[in-house]
Length: 304
Length: 299
Image (tube, rainbow over all chains, first blue to last red):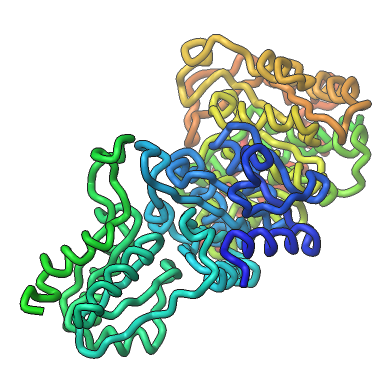
């Protein structure tokens, strides 16, 4: 099975060769074809190198979307959305609502973290999710990425695909894990990998905790099986690789609080700047921090 | 150069705009409204250029990315005048069902005329991207304030580097709302464009000057970007129907007289009549009375 990087690369290759698609990004060829996610094609085949002009670049990609090329626009660090989001949110996301003119742009925002400072660090899908007109996904597996891509191809809206570099080597799926009558973790982005570790550790100690993997963030959708399980849960913790404050984790906790009898809680990046050295960094909640939160919120008990 | 066609469309644009101003004052049109009185001859001239110099047969053969103050562009490039009038009233029968208002109108039916979001100048990178990805020659309209947006400069650089088939029209009325250009910057957009390698000229907004500037660029038309900075005058307020003072001159009137027409000519009178009839219909659709006193009349 292909890993996520290979999946992205081959879907992109097919899009460019068969659909007259195109891809816009900065520094594509110079450093490993964006972690191996971009096919080794030429400009004539639709790979367009952009200058270091983040604000205007996203506008250029929007224009290509209006032209019907269904461009892929790659932002190499999601923190750079501070510049890039202007036209994506104010034009691409609004074009269909305002003028019935589709602006189908596939935005790949790449998250990474750890010693990379105050801007480049973390996932930032929250910034996008608050604006109408742009669905948001955070796939971490090959099939999830393909489902995100197929959603884009079959809809007229722009799509924000919140990626994390830790996903690129993943070549398996991450199914939900259900335990009856206990707490549930809903995990997003790279936090899913930490949640997996936390659940493994707790289950090994016979502490039954369920895990729901969420990658379609907006429109927020749970399967029937997920809702059934959530309805029988004792508590729910939503964990994200983006900031907790005013973010998806708190939003989902709030939304579910009206649908479940069980209490809901949120955990994400702290409300502090990610500085360079490890002691000053601000990372995706680790498995230890997730377990600590489960205890702190009284979702599991020390007697376990 | 078909001066009659330019004069005919320009006077229609003007009478339409004065009708809109009156409708605003009558409470029929919903504010904010950005009127193009004083510059309504520029789009018909650009249209003439696109057809006679660039050789396009149809409005649908090229694209237009305007921003606010774009009524005259909309009207000159095939937009429905009644649709626009109703749009300004917020009607569901408006050209954008009341969603576009004055600043964000679009026409994808009879032209490739793209709406503007309201983020000043974002039509420049978007228009460049459209032209780059489609190969369709694209007219991008901005004002002297929009030209100062950093992403406009980035987009000019990309258009130059990639030889994107774009025409940048900077309508330079010297004002950002009421702040003069000399207070905002020390540089010229023409110098900036030239430094990127773009053929760029600064002109007064007389149709003959515009036409000849395009003619000089004809060899590279459709293959290289071109920027013209048009020194023009906004007769009315930035938003609304008010007027701070008499304009220094009237390029449309001067062009009309240079070409042997007078205001009493049937050609011009007919434009006034047509514009008035449109506004009369719109008043009626809005349940309001229209009288001769409402009639669009330039000062």
